[in-house]
Length: 122
Image (cartoon, rainbow, N blue to C red):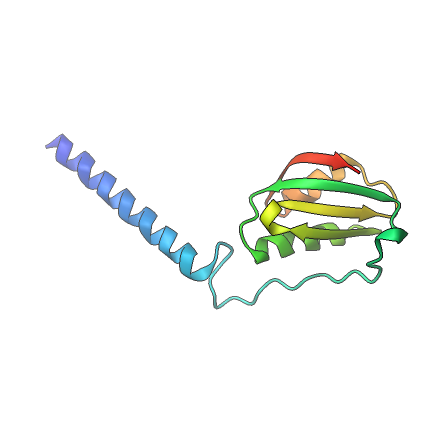
């Protein structure tokens, strides 16, 4: 009897997991398709020559364009920062007019819901 109950619980968990996965496939990882896409925060100065500091953040957890836009928006809200996200490589190129501390960059990305696992200095 207890084996049957355990089997039913496992089957129910499997069905819920499959339904959740199917929803992600049809509506994206960051919400339903009925939600408006995340709009990018535009940075006026997009000339890398005007930014003396550059870092590359390797970011875990970005799976779609909305994820990338969330990270870019969070970083672009920092004064004097321009972020360009490459989703396929899970990286953010950060151009800065003043050197922003590593801890601040990590905190901004964490607040957006993602994790920086490496910072490269260029």
